[in-house]
Each structure stands twice: as structure tokens, then as C-alpha cells.
Image (cartoon, rainbow, N blue to C red; front, side):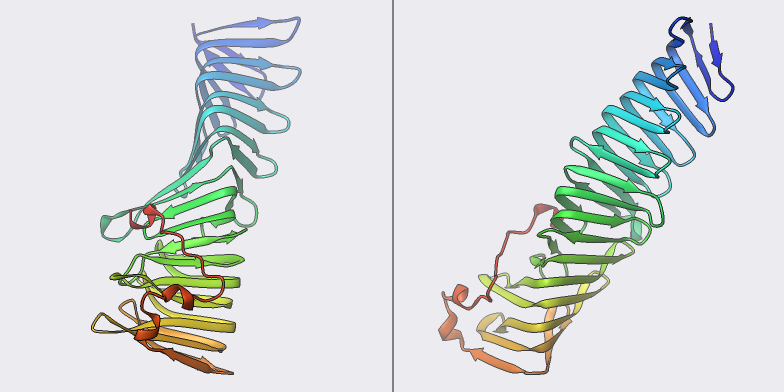
Length: 340
């Protein structure tokens, strides 16, 4: 009948309970609730070890504080270390930024302001964008870590995949900054984005930094062996516009590509069309290449330093498009999630 246990700082209430004096352990059964500072824990079963200052809870476990809610099957809490281990169907929702992380094994180190989710971790953030449309960010990886020190960030490691309306990515490592609305990709990163006329756009390099504004692409920085590819025309399956260099900066406006700057050993290859009919290839190299777009299509090219251009007429490239691809060209079919 509403059994209550109190040790000076922690209060536990349950329908019934038992205390074992020899081992200084406490068991609580049914509608267990623990209150400590600003945190409230609820479960069907609880056990507290007084000497070790360790608590174990199972069945319908939930932990809520001023900023988040955690649910799981089992939870162990070490009071002195302020360490939490949650196991089985773990789900954590952060009320401040709308981020939810799920997985099967979670560890939280409150003093270090650090936590880690393993065993099929999944991060998603639902955001209501303009005009009432829902935009959802989804991140999958082998391990996911959260830091809440100087800059709040999530780090996804190994087999990372990221999807968001009009954007998809994969990498070996990703850092997602919730407040800054940006992310960094490393270890063989590749992104696909939808912009302008076509959805088939691919970017790769040694590292990629993506800056968003209102959940839409604003700037993409690609460093080291940068390579950008986009489908030239939907009716020509083997024709891809290409850009390479050591650095590529891509600028977007309202989700549409507006300009691309390629630096250091810059090369661009663009297919020409006359009323949607093939009209050859324009290949340009220089120290710096700027490409301007209008409605998702190339509107002009400017080359600075060591400029050199080549034109290949249509009759030379028909059915031989792959012979003209730039060195390092690798096209992977866009991820289905880009269009979702």
C-alpha cells in the first residue's frame, strides 16, 4: 500500500516492497516511481543496492527530466558515477530539438555530458518546414554518440546513412550539429541531392561539409579529390556533367543550385544541347572554374588562371560517352530516399 523508501536524497514509491538488512538491498514491485532532483523514473520492478548506490529497473521503464524522455526494457543507474545503462528497445526523445534516438544498448555519462547508443542505432528529427510540410532527418550507423559540451553534436560512426527531403548521404563518419543545422561527412563520403531540373546529382570527396538553412541546402563544401556529377539530360542516360578539383563549393538558393566554384586543378565537363538534342561536349580546365546556373541548368562558365578549353562535336561522342568521363568518375544510382 504505497510503500515509500527514503535515504535523504532519493525517494522511491511502489505498491509493495521488501528490504533486506543483511545485504542492504531493497526491492519494489508494481507502479514503482523514483524521484531524484529533477528526474522521475517509473517501472514495474525496481531493486536498489544501498552500499553500491546502484539501482536496477525492468519492465515498462521510463525516465523523464526537464529536457528528455527515455524508455527501455531494463535500466541500471550508478548514482555516484551518474552513469546510466539502458537495454532493450531504448528510445530517447529530446524535447528541445525534436531529436529521437533509438537502439538496443545505451550508455549515458552525465558528468561527462556524453552518451552512446549501439546495436542498430537510429536518429530521426521531424521538423515542420514552411507551408506545413514535414521534413524528417534520418541517420543510421553502427554507433552513435552525443556530446553536450561546448557545441551540441551527434557523431555517427561506421556504415553511416543519412536521408532528408531532397538529400541523402553515406560515409564512414558523420558529425551532425543540431543548433547549427549542419553536418560534416568523412571517410569516403558521398551525397545525393535534388535540385533544379533533375534529382540525379552526386558529390564525393575526402570530406564534405553541408550547411542547411531552414532545412534546405545552402552550401556544400567538398575538400580533397572533390568530384561532382549531375545527369545532363533525362533522355540521355549515359551523359553526365562532371567537375573535379581539390576543392568544390556549391551554393544553393531555395533548394536550387545557383553556382559552383572549383579550385586547384579544376576541370569541368559539360554536355551541350540544342532544343534537347545533343550538341557535343565542352571540357574546360584552369586554376579556378566558376559555373553559374539558371533554373537548374548551366548558364555560364568562367575560368581563371591557365584556362584551356576543348570542344568535342556530337558525332564524336555518340555511344562513346564513357570514353570522355573524367578520371575518377564513379556513378552510383541515386538513393531512393532522395525523392522521398
